[in-house]
Amino acid sequence: MTDPTGARPVDVLTVLRSAPVTPSVVRVTLQGAPEVVAAAAPTLAVLVPRVGDRAPEWPAVARDGRIVWPQGSHGVSLRSYTARRQDPVTGEVDVDFVRHGDGPAAAWAAAAAPGDVLGLASTAPLGAGSAPWLLLAADETALPAVARILAAAAPSTRGVALLEVAGPAEEQPLPVPPGVQVRWLHRGDAEPGTVPLLADAVAALTPPAGEEVFAWVAAESAAVRAVRADLRGRWGLGRAQHHAIGYWRRGRAMSPAG
Image (cartoon, rainbow, N blue to C red; front, side, top):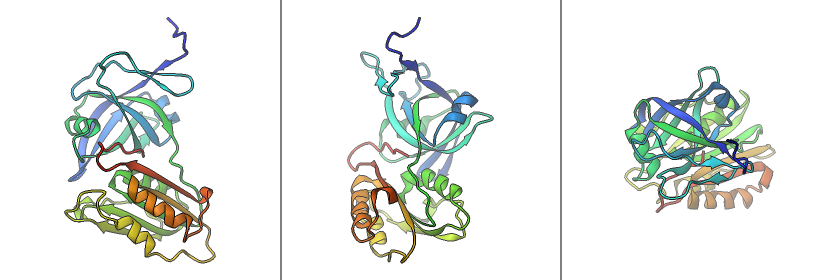
């Protein structure tokens, strides 16, 4: 029977395997229809069911992209993640989950087992621009997006990637062009989102003279606001020259958007 509202069902991804990447990051490999994975942009709007629920009551997706939620209690949460890897031939997708706090996505990822399911509501681009000089400022929730941006950058790209993690054990290998310097910022025992490492690191940089610059920033919302203010003020970057997005907000369950 055709839905009179024109809403479509969500696409379903099934867990193949999961493995730790670092002490706080788990990578879940899922599989969906190859044509769905091939058409998907890197940023995934995923629907997370309760732990162990392999037959959740999924919402539908309206023609305008709105989520049409079922009535009553359904136990499905909407979150946004960047796919670390997409294979359009096999339909495989790698999604990295940061195990901070006790939110629904972190709990689901910690317990993910082959046969578990996630819903895929929609996808979107990363918002990364192209320029000869690139500034990246991000925390661990945005490392999959950072990896995708660096992998897509021209070999001649120059710049700096400022990456905040807890410590050396949380650093990850990245596909870095020779002219881009990666600086890992360690916050130690401080809770995520409580120290101004990213804002201070950007403030300590001297904007490159005579260079066309693009800046991409993703981290805790307050940190992103501080960096954005510096980019628009001291760096003089216009809207088309930077993309700054709060991936999560301290005090709420982490729900990274990229």
